[in-house]
Image 1 (cartoon, one colour):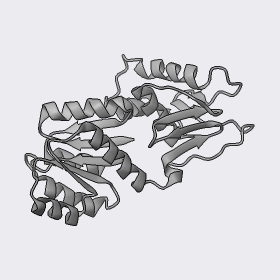
Image 2 (cartoon, rainbow, N blue to C red):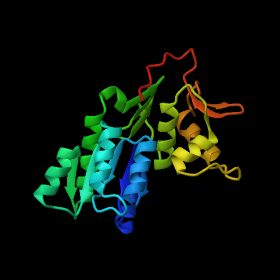
Image 3 (cartoon, one colour):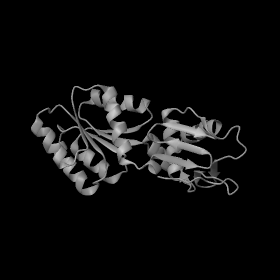
Image 4 (tube, rainbow, N blue to C red):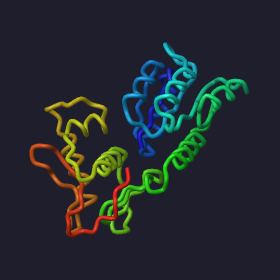
Length: 233
């Protein structure tokens, strides 16, 4: 799951980002309303965490923009504004939830899970190919019914490969999505993490799902002899 967080308090933003990434979410952090509006419009996110007191463009204006451009994108307002009038304005403008500061991180995490559950039909919450399943809400991965423990980056990389199952993705595409990096010919981080995944996903199984696409990058697909159970993205 990919989350955009718009928060001008750097320390708070980093705290929430690190906490959510430890729960295997991918979190992009921006610090003003212009960046939030642009990022949410140009990229695909599963949820937005939005502060109201943002520089350059107020959070309510960002919310109005998102409701015009992406009406189904879940938005959780996280703000110091605690007046009833502020809550009513945000909810009427289209916010899906409203959490005042100070807040409990465990409550924030629970609200995020609830919003994601409501915003995805069951088939969209689970990616599956052959005997490999990835639950995007529960953050669980299984192959042949056996749970596989992945790090945050491994989970994000596998989710990306499964969302584009059957299609080759380049190293530069993976770097941008998983690490927020532009293509760097000197880094082999993608190949290193693909090898990590192969050891956890494919080792011990006669059929290898993660495949190298010569001249392109990598793909994840079920060979014809495995009856695929479907991929929902």
